[in-house]
Length: 312
Image (cartoon, rainbow, N blue to C red; front, side, top):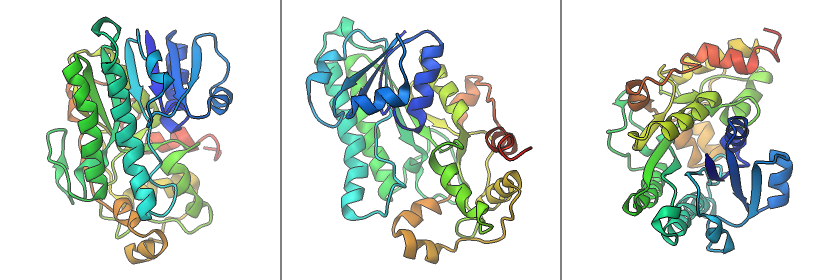
């Protein structure tokens, strides 16, 4: 398979590149900093890094021909810094504009040169704060900032369907990876013996092991009947208090110190709303298609990521 990837130097992207190369695929990646991307991803005869900004038109768009699939993972990390007006605009434009430019690139090529499949990153933020309501792929969107971002993001990707491309929207929960992302940031207060649930702890936290994100991308590539949104979350629904308790146990640390929402708002601003939102997300499509989760339970996921390094 020939695959074109944007956002390849991010948390999921690096894992995906390594996985597809191990499967024998030819992988091209797009990066604003080709030299850095080459260093991060390593030297491989089936890997090619090309320079370009996915949010802007450029010579890179001419390269997007003859690929079997495109995986779009581009987008600013929402937890990088406080949500100022400028950063919120970056969260939106880095997703919407990169997807728009990618679809435009596909459009510029004749039908035989277009990819069969576009797998576009998305997020469970689509659903907003929904309390204890069970949410599958057919559930309606929320109305907060992140929900509106995801709706616009997905609408851009959907336009590739008009070009004869199968579109899969991977609505990722919190991707657990000890080397990057949400889990790495969550671990710090626990290591300082100050860990605990966010907010009141009753809210649901949709999560997934990075290995299963890669597995669901592979499922989306192989199952040609799969299209539209796919909830990339584990089948076990977990509340914040239970997540904190299990994370503390995996790190051999207490989980007795909650982070009240008003304190989080003082420190993080509007981002605190996203971190304390409750989303009981169900992976209905993945389960229906028989995807075999390697880490369906949080305890096993945390032990796989943290057990060895903490002597378990």
